Image: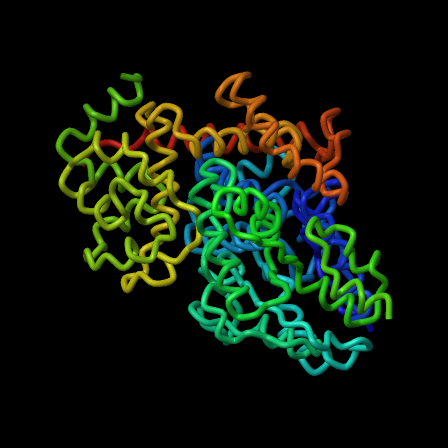
Amino acid sequence: MAKEYSFYPGCSSQEGASSSNYLKSVQSMCDVLDIKLNTIPDWNCCSASIGYSGGGELPRLALSARNIALSEKHNGGQDIVATCAACWLSTRETAERLHQDPEMMAETNTALKEAGLQLTNATKIRHMVEVLIEDIGYEEMGKHVKKPLEGIKIAGYVGCQTNRPFGIEGESFENPKYLDKFVETLGGESIPNYEKKVSCCGGALAFSEPEKSQALVKGIIESALDHGADMIVTPCPVCQMNVEVYQDQINAKYGTKFHIPVTYYSTLMAVAYGKTAKEASLEGQIIRAKKLEAICAK
Amino acid sequence: MTDLNKQMVEQYRNSFLKEVEANVEEGEWVKMCMQCGVCSGSCPLGPYWDHPPQELFMMIRAGKREEVLASSSMWMCTSCYNCIARCPRELPITHIMHGLAHYAKRLGLAPKNQPTMKFSQKFWDNLMVTGRVNELKLGLSLYFMNGLVEGIKTSLKMKNIGLGMLLTKRMNPMEMLGGHSVKDKSGFKAMIKKAQELEAARIAKFKTP
């Protein structure tokens, strides 16, 4: 029987948005692993970790509280699962903050009442990666591999917000190994000593401080290439975007010749599970993942 | 000087620490800082901070109100959470930085034209319109945040990235016409309005002990 979750997709995964390709590949992956995602009806933005200039603490808490309350109302009893690192982080932070502070919880519920909602706050907030590791398991993930990612060397770029401050149970903040294990499980070659695996890409500051952020991205790519990586894999939409789309600008500024694909773990899984290039959303790569395309074409 | 700023100066004369504890998100943690400097050393944009977090904490305790609140420092936070993960005393440093930034802006003390402050406000305003972020409008508003001429220059510089996003269907020009939205917009807005009122009331009610 399918495992069911209350799904919080987040703004960037919507149709025509920057990580719509992530969502497509997640759906293909979940289809194989018999995971059913019940989208939270009428979910709203969590304000990520950049909305703080305009939004004070309580308005920001109210945003995520509304999503949790909607989930409790419509998908009662199901864990909330997010695929976006910032969505997961904001929602889980809100749940924990409101557990610790009864006054804030009371005020949040007063605000929610205006939207006809009430928060019990008894819902577990999880990242898709946790579902894969804890509920599905590496062994099961490996069983469905039809086309192993043979001969592809992949740098596992975990980034920040899937890793800190909560991270994945049993993994360390400084050297998490699960992306490497994903790669190995899918038949690819991992780079366990990829030293930039938890370095920051600049996050939202890629927009407001592009030079500073691109200097960080340069280091992340350089290190992957030094290790002989064919591509980079990440669980985070902001990491994916920042590391993929600015390569030309970085090349122009630093005289580098970067042209390395950056995909999601779900992209790799969809390909290894024998899905088509379209189902794996390979057309969503601005820098095409030709080695994955070749596997799909096999 | 804004009225709120005047009021706070009066209220917390000589005790900036108390002011931060009462009004800044997670501000009650500031006095727990033991000045080890791990946060400052762990920050990806560390070299660009006028005063790294450890220094800000000491400055708050020393009553350096203007220097802290008018600083561009906390606007350098990328929300990477390195400082939180590594702080031996488990201070929620990322949140304190966001809280300080928000408070400085609220008082009208944040540096004018600080790019992350502007982007952060634009992000908030953008999501307030429909309850969901409209990436296309957000991106364009950002390019043009320093006027038309610079906006056109930035747009030209970014055109290849935009084209790439468009061709991979990760950007949709139709989003200009409204785009994705929550259905219960009125409930959503009423909720935010109430949260803002409650928060303003909480800040107003704190008095110097």
